Amino acid sequence: MPELPEVETVRRGLEQAMLGRTFTGVVLRRGNLRFPFPDGFATHLLGRKIESIRRRAKYLLLDLDDGRIILSHLGMSGRYTLFDAEKVKQFETSQNIDEHSRFGTATGFDGRHDHVEFRFDDGSVAVYTDPRRFGIIDLIEVGEEQIHPLLETLGPEPFGDWNANQLAKKLHKKTTSIKVALLDQRVVVGVGNIYACEALHRSGIHPQRQSKTLVRKDGKPTKKLHLLHENVVQVLEQAVEVGGSSLNDFADVNGTLGYFGHHFQAYDREDEPCLKEDCGGTIERITQSGRSTFLCPRCQR
Ligand SMILES: [Zn+2]
Image (cartoon, rainbow, N blue to C red; front, side, top):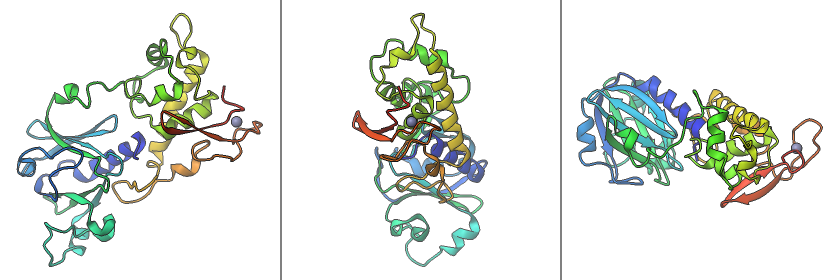
C-alpha cells in the first residue's frame, strides 16, 4: 500500500508532467473505483487546465482552472503511469482503444486494470491502474477540501510546523499503544505501518508502550517523545528523498520502483539481528490492531 512518501513522490511526478496541461480527453473504462465516478466527470474535465497539484495526507488534489479540484487517492494498489507524446505513439494500435487499454505492456495485467486514461493537449497520457480498486477519483469544489468527509478529520501534516508539543497534546490522555496512536490519522497524517515501526525502533520506544507515558505530567513531551517526533519526520523525509518505497505492486508515476525498502532497520526483518550498534537483540514480529509490528525487544522500551 502506498504510504505518504510514495504519494508525495507521485505528486511530484504528476506535477512535472501535468502542470499547465489541458485535458483533451478522459476515458473511463468502468463506472466506479471505491466510489462511483461523479456524474459527467469526463465531460467536465474537457478543456480544463491543471493549475497546481497538492497533497493532503495521502490524498492528491489537482486544482483546475474553474475552481474545482480532482481528488485522488491511490487506495491499496493504485498508480499512475505517464506517457509522453512520443511514447503514446509507440502504443498506437488499430484496436478500439476505449474498450481496451493500449498500455498494458507498460502498466501491467495486460491493461485489464487501466481504469482511467487522462489525455492532454501536448499529446501525453496519464493512465490510472488499480487492480484492487480501493482508490478514489472524485471532483470537488474549491474550499470543499476543508469540509469533505474524507478530509475534515485529518490531523496535522508531519512536514512543516508540526512539533513535539502538538504530538504531546494528542497523546497525553491516550491509553492506546504508541504504535496504534501513530497510525491514527487524527494524531498525525501519513504515518503508515512501515514508517511507524521504523520511527519507534530508531527512538528505542516499545510499540506497545502506552501513549500517555511519553507525555510529562505538565503536558509537555518527554525526551523520548521529542526523539520520536524527530524520527517520524526523518524516516518520512528520507523515504521521500529516495522516491518512496516499493512494496507489493506499487510503482511511482514513472513506473520505476523506489528502494527505501532496502534500508529498513526493523520492518520485515523478523528473526534477523537488530542493526543498532552494540544491541545484539533480535527483531520480533507481533500483531497490533491486526497489523504486523516489528521491534527489537532489547533496545525498545
Ligand atoms: Zn535492538
